[in-house]
Length: 204
Figure (cartoon, rainbow, N blue to C red):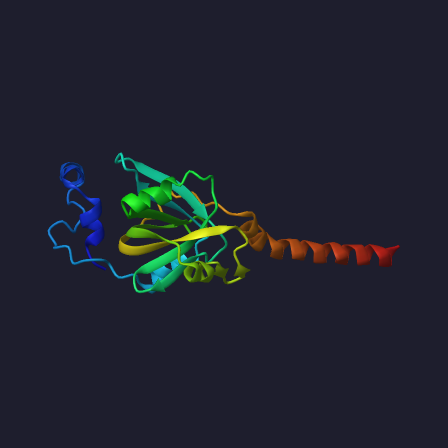
């Protein structure tokens, strides 16, 4: 899996607290950084199946800045290797995230599957692309094409990732997910109502 995540996430202060409070400390510090962690099918499935995630960038004043990004399922694309990308929709015209990426490409993604209580944290280096052919490719999703206005592409070379445990992640469902789970019961209730109506008609 690699140790890049541990080397990027855990500084001296975090290690000191690990040793003081939670012996043994989280492993990885004593193992040399062996470069970017290679995305596997598990991480790629989580990323490309996502319809939402949170994107953190670094402001020029050194502060973290987090934005919520969403789109139709499949709006995050795998370009090959450790590279992923997504179309950047027209927003509030503040350009904070894209400006931060222009100044410092380091980003972090928090991707969660709330019904399954899975979460993936990703570190990467991003660039803003104005390539029209790439943008046209990223507008295509499994169900067709993104209808929102797409102005540019965000391309991320993944450096490291880590899977969180499911503890404390509260399951949440979209209206579509609720409908998928309840539709069989609704259909069955409808069938039973039809049967009851037919039996009442015969009795009458």
